[in-house]
Image (cartoon, rainbow, N blue to C red; front, top):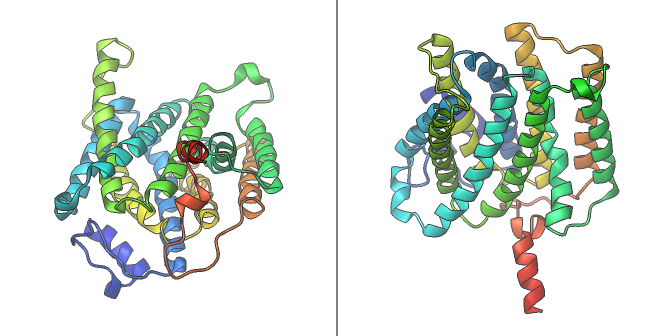
Length: 349
């Protein structure tokens, strides 16, 4: 944890970071959007590196047991640094965190299950398509009009997903791991939308803690159910590879990264956040090559390039970014207006 705090210090400046305060894991005063963007890039690096780590860890543990241990360790660590937060904890924070935790858990469950059957690099790019799904879901369920760039980006990304996931032999040979990962991408897209909504109304530290704790509880429940119905026997081997995977995923990719994300998205634009999240699959490819020498084939590389291009097109030519401002500008009530509020407004009018 000390090393993770040093990372935060290098990004935000030692004079502006107060660790173990009433604000939780970290508290930063008047950060610039550049620092918030750098923080989100760090999140993408941490998440991208976990694809190959999780892939190796699943050789020694079942999916739900791995997720349960990962999120339990992360929740304990976050609670240790957020003890004072409990004094100001509100019921609304709990409900919002549980909603975030539900979508986050489902996303991780599908993505982790998919990694059993697909490669870390492909999983990274399929997961990255969640950024393209964000504006589409906003149009479908939040009543937002899409710019032409959003449609163009979605078409290009779908074209890329075809070459990335469907082999030359045809759709009959589609890898089920890629299908599971695409479902996870949709769930992550909803999570991104809800993060944008809730971080302006609730404590970022509270949301971070509750969503991670909720993931831990759900994972333990599913581990018990899966073992009881003999769908997935509980398995946890005492191997150092598994310990390392849990350490990296629980401490850095969960406790640190999601705390940073929930804070940083308050001080940058939705477009900036989404573009920075596109770096995750790039980091997944780089780390997979470095650690296990994995290389994508020509067809998969072509698909990955189109997916990446589609993501950039959707964000650069899609919804306009909010104007520059020294204050938090990730305004959920403007950019991510939930469907239930739209219905309420229509009824009142």
